[in-house]
Each structure stands twice: as structure tokens, then as C-alpha cells.
Length: 361
Image (cartoon, rainbow, N blue to C red; front, side):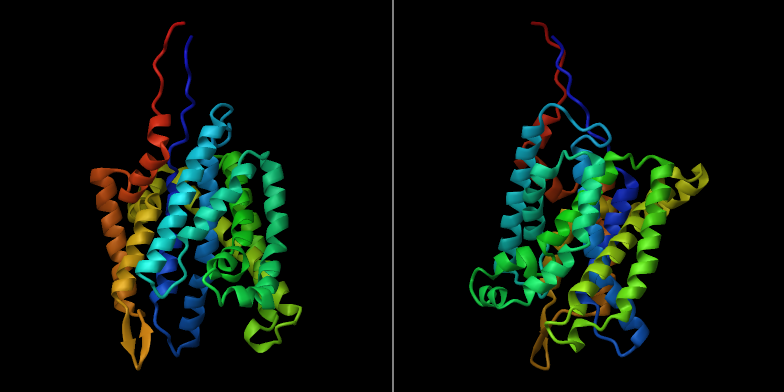
């Protein structure tokens, strides 16, 4: 009898590049200082929401890849779910540990990331068209539900207790699971539909551009939450329109990165590969880079006029350049990121991917 173990798809540079850009966007959102320039303020505001959703989209694509990509694994699904569940629990614990010990002046993504992974387990092998339709349908309504839920008296009461993290996970925080999971579903569906196909990548780019160019201008016509009553219908509607538009931006970024690194002419691919290699390296080790950046910004906390802050343009530049250099050098000489390697070992994934030798029986 011959035991055949299906090999998982390799890393895809275009997806890693998009994830690396999401990390850079998070750095800007986290520690860029306030500015009096309206144009600069608007540019910084772009880094507040879109990197989160791009990160969730690439997370879903990653789940699609490790579960077989275009050809979902048929055997070992329970083992894979167990490995993902172990990773999820570790991420939740790591996020809570960082929150309790370092207490950075930013929302922490890791614990919500872990919760979203757990929610995704029963949805991981949905047919791609079903996953895509469900993801798009939910993302049209869940941001509005999150806005409404976050403004209820019940959620406000929960946030005044030690269990505030539960409300933050679901609706009240910067990364509500009810928004993240639909975006991850879209990512899984794209991975199932073959992101190596020029036609699919072109379609993703067109749909993403259309969603962003139509929905974001419409949402900007609605009054922002700060200037309307909490009961206004415009707040949840704006949230859903903005999220749909920003997911469209994320889809366009993924498509462009895939086109540059895999689908363009060889000369373009070579240039793009060289220019984007530090960003790709960051995106290939997101857990390590994200965790290290939390450590750095926690050490950078200081008091200004009696107010704690970590904002600094030199810190933004240092995080971007330092992360690129660290990730590029580590990947070149040591391979997989340090925390990624530990997480992989802890979940047993290294052992499960060792190809079995032919045996007789």
C-alpha cells in the first residue's frame, strides 16, 4: 500500500506582498502623530481601516492555501482543523499576554485573529461560490450590526467589567469578529478559485475597483458618527458601505501584487520581485513582525503634557525600515519567521506535512 500525502501550495509572493503592505499600514495607523494638514490627516486615516481588512482578506487566502487551494484536501481535514484550533488558542493567549504585560496604546489584533480562526473552522471547506456569496452578503450587513451593537447599553455595561474583551471580540472593538469572518470567507473563496489565473485576478481587480470607486464616495456623503446622534440610521449604513469599499481596495491590492509578482512579463516580475522582496519577507512572517512592533511601541510610550503617547514619525520610519531589514535578512538566511516556526511546531503542522514513504501491506 502506498500512502500519499497531498502537498500544500507554496507561499505566494503576491499575497505575502499584500500582507506586508497591510503591516506597514498598521504601523502608520498606530504611531503616526497628529497633523494640522487636512491632506496628511486624510492620508493617515486611510491607514486606519483598510490595513485591517486587507490583513483579514490575506488571512482567509492563507487558510484557503493551507487547506489545499484549488483542490481542497479530502483526507486529514480533522487534523488540519485541530492544527488551526491549536494555533487559534495560542494566538488568543499571546494577545491576552501582551495586553496584560505590555499594555500598548493600540488595539491588539492577535486574540481576535484567534477567535476568528475558531469561527472559520466549520466554514473552511464550503464550496467556493457559496463561501464568496456568503462572505459578500454578510459583509454588507455585519459592519452595520457591529456599529449598532457597539452603541447598546448592554455592550457599554460589559465594557465596564473585566470581561470587556468579550464585547470587543464580537462587536465593540476595532477588529470585530462578525466583520472579520466574512472577509476571511471571501479570501478562502478566492484561494479556491485559483489566484494563479489571469482571468480571475483581472476580475478581482475590476470588481475591487468598482466597489471602491462607487461605495466609498457614497459613504463619504453620509455624516460621520461624531456629528450625528447615536440612533441615526446613517451610522450603520456608512459603516457597511465603507467596509465594502475598503474590502474592494484590499482585493485590488491583492490583484495588483499578484499581477506584478506572478503574471506580468518576466522583466517586470524580476524588477517587482527585487523591489518588493522586503515587503514580501514581512508578509511571510506577519506574527513575528506584528508582535515585535507591539514590543517596540510599548517601549516607546512616554508622557507628553500628562498624556501617554507613542506617536512619532521617526518611530514610523524606524518600524517600516527596521521590519523590512529584519524580515529580509531573517528570511534569506534562516527561512521561516521565528514565531511562525514556533507556532507551526506547537500545532504539529511540521510533523503532519512530512511525506510518508511507500510502504507495503
